[in-house]
Image: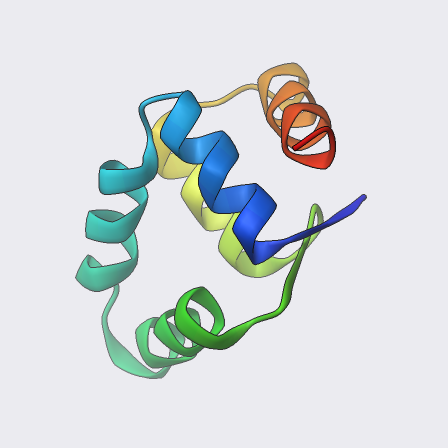
Length: 77
């Protein structure tokens, strides 16, 4: 599943997770953190299987089903 970054951020906002996502990305360190911040700021789309999505879903404590639902909601926006 692929959604635009706009859709992803709106879905996170609706779920009350946007500020938590911003903080999680800002807190990543090293080259992985730099790459995540570039993705977070400049990516046009978000892939369900991308490393940043996996990292954020772990930080949020989301199950696979919850993450699928979040992507479905994003796709509908």
